[in-house]
Length: 256
Ligand code: ZN
Ligand code: FE
Image (cartoon, rainbow, N blue to C red; front, top):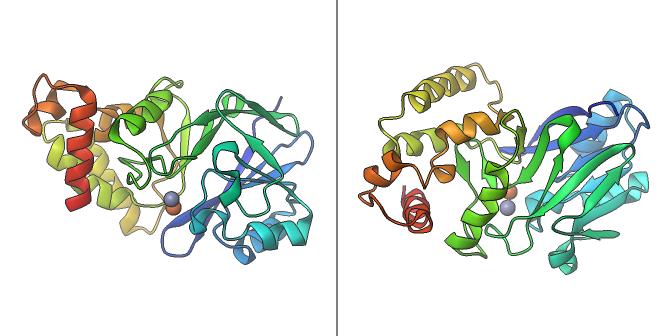
């Protein structure tokens, strides 16, 4: 099967919505439509027909365009079983371990609670693409609105296990602010320092820093590195349990 064609649509202040098209069947998914109009316009401009919406979680900046896009296209809305009541227009409920077929493209679904209790992610293994919503960001992770540090650490562990080449299509351009924080809890990490400088260059040129890869995140994202001795030492918790270190890093970011 051919790899998905993925088109990134910046909307509002810092959201990314994605169009993902299966070239074999023409099936095209919108991932987390914050809004309808810019998404419909982008699909028109590409000549792509939207057949699906894939939602990761219930927040308005991820489902706000659901009903209008469904009305305009007749598409099928796929979302988390654990949170079906909060997903407008949901047709198909999916959850951990499910395989969802979008045309000839296949996504594996992960339950990744923490940011919200019903958050899911879609991994298209053959396309090396992960749509992770607000669970993992470039150099960051989502705030824990409805979950515990232990839940989020477990959720992020599912992403840590993915192939290093996996591209991380997260839902926000938060990377520069995340980098400012990351260097405070991983100060000796030269790879992080280099990435932070590159991010500044990209943003100065008005370019996106997303997608990144799992390899980059493993090397530089402090929220994936709570079991790293350098990060634990930097927050004064050498030898502590990774969940405790993760909770400390997340708490510091909340106050940063
Ligand atoms: Zn969210
Ligand atoms: Fe969001």
